[in-house]
Image 1 (tube, one colour):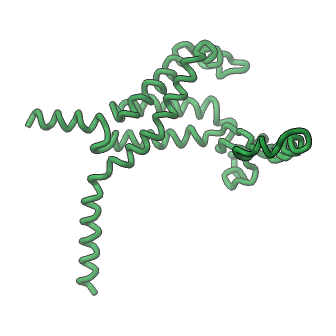
Image 2 (spheres, rainbow, N blue to C red):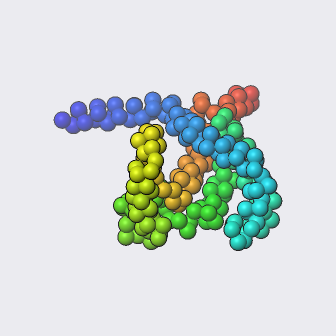
Length: 210
């Protein structure tokens, strides 16, 4: 029995040793998921940059941030350039830092007041009975029911819902927090073995010195 257990442990450890050669797959998938999200966010800001500057600086209907022009430029460039770098795994650890800062600022200034949920769902255990519950989530089900009733009576409801059900956007911190955690993982892991530009630059540099 003991001998069989030792063999199983050895097999497990051997499998782990071999698995490390594929450990670049996980960071690659994180980068491929994050890159288009960041590029799209940065490109959208770039296309409407003046409006973004105004929104960043306006204290009444915007964020009321200081130096809105600079803040808008930093957010746009971090997301657009950072997304491209993530796609290729270039300067992965370095670019993860400003992107994480961007996510923190987004959570603190835009999403925090709406709680956790990105999509309003009053039945979610992430909202029910917690500090993350807000009035808009409580009222979301009533509003959604009213909207469906109006559409079923006066609109082409089957056609409108053929691509999916209607939801109410809550705009909580859920997505920004998720992106922050993924970027934090990349800060520690880097771009990934065999799958990133960072790895091959380091690999070639080591071989050159040898």
